[in-house]
Image 1 (cartoon, rainbow, N blue to C red):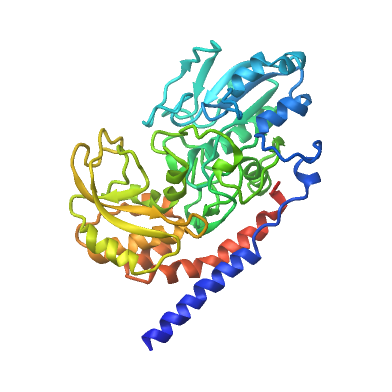
Image 2: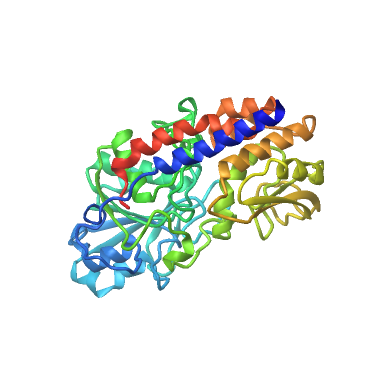
Length: 437
């Protein structure tokens, strides 16, 4: 009987994968994605396409730009510098008059909850922080003297990334003051794949701009943990679904495909936040982000943050064995020891602790949501007395209270994720009209 149940569960997982493939969003036609371009094989981010053939969107305007060090082209040039110095932008009479920066600051090197305003040393412009105790959206008072608001930030493909929240609140601000909002699109570094859990609607904060509620910056609307869209596609979806009456223009990328991994674009990986050191950390991040609501380290303060987890009380060999026995595709779990150094989350800094390393063996088969469920299941199974969970913090990140409760009750993690797959398939169908690639 047990063997038969195991075979049945395996078939369910295969069917879930087949459903995801069958219902995956079809690429938009070239005319839809790039209406002003001829077919070209070379990848280019939205900022490059803007300078090559779409400057009419901003011509003759005073603009404010929301960006940071991730807003670069294939040669590593900043969108701010190019809009101020490129001859094409000068001929279009574009004037950059104000900068805004998200969490982690204009250079991406700040890892605390109150990022101050500062002067950009290269341009001399004031950089207004959108991650202080007082501010999430750009204040209306700083937008009334500009003609357009431009957004160029690199997303990492996970629902919990605060840059998406910055974009949504900025779109609302632009709509309030009646100025155009222009998104310069960038790749999803972990591809167009979508994975459960979908965010519970009860956890979403689509209308809550309260600065002290940091969940408002990422728990915006029911979306998959691995959302599978680009920033431009997210902007189109949010504008329609929330809705936001913004004068929205998305400058699409050239030569982008939904299945592209980061290195296929030719863009240099610029660390978007201190803990997102590589595309691999970005891939594994959605599997471990929920552990920020527990008394475990997620490897912050090491060279591989979000690729490992640990705690002084962790029986790493036991937990790693239990997880490996699940037979999850494309991944294995290795017991190790590691020492966080100057960890920004203040978890075990300077102390060697037992841990588990998540080793991605096949990124095309790796399923972050399934791995995250397995981690929670294995920890609860081995360390029910030692594991401490802030339920709301975990739920806002993992996305499903019901799934957490089931895993707490020792439900099979594969079965928990399998039950959530139909929601993701339905989501894929709903967002199809907003996809560009």
